[in-house]
Length: 139
Length: 216
Image (cartoon, rainbow over all chains, first blue to last red; front, top):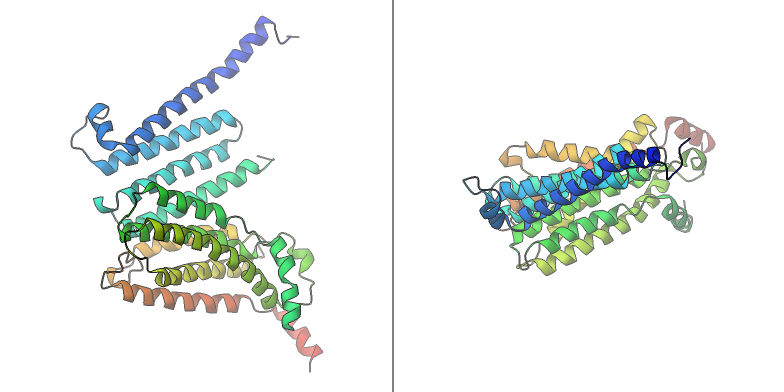
């Protein structure tokens, strides 16, 4: 039998905490980079993503999806055994940011008249389904 | 049923109808409005309001969801009266949530919003959601038809994106000459949806027959 202070218990605890620490760091990193790409695409292009040609909308899209990936990791840290809820909520956050990218870039191209409502509803459905799954005690 | 008896059904309807879903939808729409620059061009604001309209409508599609139906369907009130009271309660919350978004949008917009025309879109989308929910519930007996109706609205939107330009529902600039024609299409679609809701809320055949026998 191992006690809480035994070497075996400490080793097991470290093994369990390693994925969560990595997820936390990765989540924060992705979230910060995502927000930076969304909020200041020109600066992000000049300092980080030096890939010509500059395209504001696609850079903000990249930011939106990084926010979604970061959200998945951070939600996974908060609830490691709620896989579907974490996936739905994280992707929902990314889709909400993607919708914002299309709203901000209404004059940059695409089909904003239909894209924005469609992405908005998809965000809402993902977040609502994720919230329901999160609250489900059986999940 | 007398109006007084119908009104007496409102409080119990308010207890069972899922009301809160419209609020987060409106909050998300409001957050997007706050993140765009002040004095935004009208077409940008209209697109956000339309997105919020769609989200609020999807929330409103849960109007007939009631896991307790198997207990309460023995009530003597006709189906349309019971459904009507639920719709009245849900409509109040949906319109209030949507009005909040529109008030915020008016504040952020550089030009006056075409509120009446946007309300037509809300009315149509909400009614389409109800129609899908009512028919799904009638056909399948599913007590949570809103779970089908809300994604169905997304499918409807994805299909509507593929319509040719002359039939498009997505005119987004009121200054555009095709705005009026697209609004006419929204009204026509809304009328079809209202008819679909009314038809879906018929009494079950067995109940119609028993009523006819009771009232010769």
